[in-house]
Image (cartoon, rainbow, N blue to C red; front, side):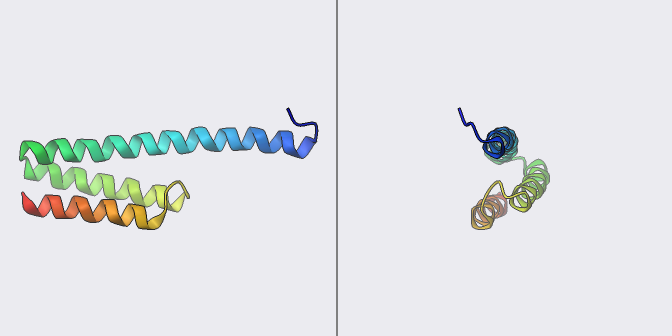
Length: 86
């Protein structure tokens, strides 16, 4: 355990950020999974709706610094490609 006051504060903020990032990543995975399930079922209307929702979630995660912008772009591109195949 740290003895320096500023380092003790950093430990607390790092833990809070870690938990926030974990929650955001979990919700991203859920949104992408729901899109994939709709696409697997062949439900184009629902898949397009879920694609938009997941895309917004990815953009928000990028703006918060949780994931890299290129990772979000790759995931959005893959979802768009999959939706167009339906």
